[in-house]
Each structure stands twice: as structure tokens, then as C-alpha cells.
Image 1: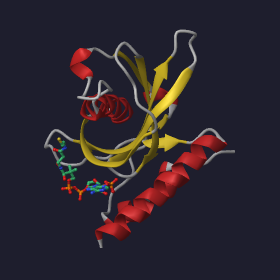
Image 2: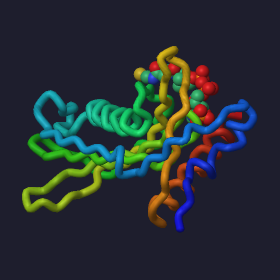
Image 3: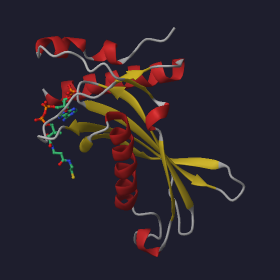
Image 4: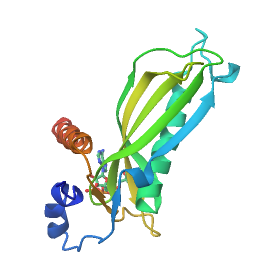
Length: 175
Ligand SMILES: CC(C)(COP(=O)(O)OP(=O)(O)OC[C@H]1O[C@@H](n2cnc3c(N)ncnc32)[C@H](O)[C@@H]1OP(=O)(O)O)[C@@H](O)C(=O)NCCC(=O)NCCS
């Protein structure tokens, strides 16, 4: 039996702020997002490899759509927590970006975006993995409550736990 993770990570802060948690609960699957790109000349750097800034733009869009689908609100990028370039990509490569939500707080959400090069035989090689914190904004453009996240597998629980550790590390660094 898997827990509703949204009730693990955030209740203290809700109680402090005297809020009632939004009743809505969503699964990871409900906000999964993919995007496909083919690398053209305009996407290359001076070494004829995919320009990191271009990839970051694509990652940010995928993360934003995941967060919009989960929250049903407009969102803004608060933090790019990790951005790991594992291998280069070149002109004419097919790039596949897959995004899914890993953790939710009150108004913030962590999204993981994995980027692959897809070979002609259909196999995929990971070239980048990123974790991004998005914040949902209400109509007043202030952070607003998002639905809780329903954790449905040991893998999703492990991702939730890793996101909590990243959050703790960030708060230590900010002190
Ligand atoms: C992100 C932003 C909305 C946060 O606003 P704020 O007034 O600081 O709001 P809060 O302190 O209530 O934080 C709201 C949430 O964001 C999270 N957050 C804010 N800064 C964060 C940071 N540096 N790291 C992790 N989470 C952060 C908070 O933990 C909180 O999460 P929770 O509601 O789940 O507990 C605000 O700083 C902002 O608009 N920044 C600019 C974003 C932007 O323009 N992005 C595009 C860059 S090109």
C-alpha cells in the first residue's frame, strides 16, 4: 500500500499557515510530458555539438508543462537544482525529452526531465538528467496550493525520497 506522498512532505507548513490542504490528488502519470526535437544548425555550438542553452530551453518548457498539468495553474521556474550533461549530441540527432513530477510541497513541485538521443533502431541513450523546482501561481501571481501527489510504486517513492534530500541540501546551502 503506497502512501499519498503529499501528506508526507508538507503538513507542518500547512498547519503553521493555518491552511486546509487542497483535497485533490493526482498521479505521476497524469502530468507526464514528452517532446521530440531534431537538432539543426541553429542548435549547435562552435564545436558542432548541441548548445547547452538550447537544451536547457527545451527542458524548461517540458518541466513547465508537467507542472501546469499537475497544478492546473500557471507556473514559474524557481530553481534548476541539477543539470547533468552525460554525453554530447550532434546535428541531425533525434532528441526525446521525457518529464515527470517527483515531489510536491504546498505550491512547489519538483520535476525530473530526462533527455535522450534516439538512434535509428529506436534505442535511446541518456544525454541529460535535470531536476527543476516549479512554483504554481494563482490569479494574484502569488504561490498557490497544488494537488497532492499519489505515489503508486517503489520507484516513485524512491524519487520522492531523493527529492526530499535535495530540498534538505538546498536549505543547508542557503543558510
Ligand atoms: C519562485 C517565486 C514565485 C517564490 O516566491 P516567494 O515569494 O519566495 O514565495 P514563497 O517563499 O512562499 O515560496 C513559494 C514556494 O517556492 C519555494 N521556493 C522558493 N524559492 C525556492 C528556492 N530557492 N529553492 C526551492 N524552493 C523555493 C518555497 O519553498 C515554497 O514552496 P512550498 O509552497 O511548496 O513550501 C518567486 O521567487 C519568483 O517569482 N521568482 C522568479 C521566478 C522566475 O521569474 N522564473 C523564471 C526565470 S527566467
